[in-house]
Length: 165
Image 1 (tube, rainbow, N blue to C red):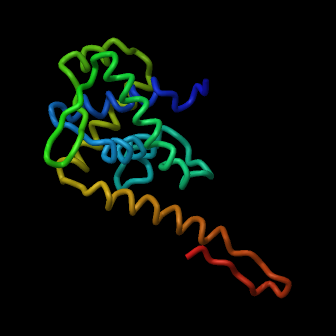
Image 2 (tube, rainbow, N blue to C red):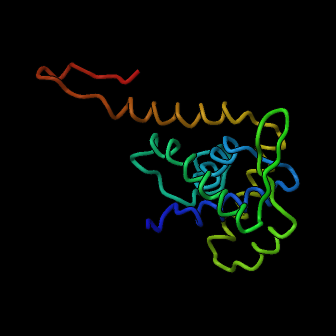
Image 3 (spheres, rainbow, N blue to C red):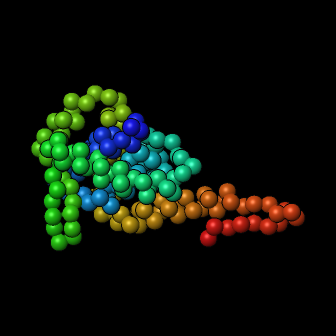
């Protein structure tokens, strides 16, 4: 079992986000975006420092994060810390009344840092009704720009460049 991004770790991060926006439900796409944003808050305008370092596999990270988030949400559902809600827009997840009490029992500094960043994130992004797709687009554009700058390869004459766009 991988100790990083395990279903329990991702579930705790999702619970912090769901509790911060309680009673508003969030769908998986929103949770995937917000999970990335809470860990890499330093990449956002005016955000607090990031909790996790940038990874060279950043673009693949979001693709893997959806599956991890779904597994983390299953842990929360089984523990009774979240419920699934339906609406015309589809399925969403909502913290339960017990969620906040459970989180208050966790004393790890990491959880405190998650709570601080989640509170900032909810203030800035959800109250301004930031479109999750637009937020994801900004993240991937930043990665593409970083890859594009790093992908310049010198040919035999030093003038050949490869651009990923």
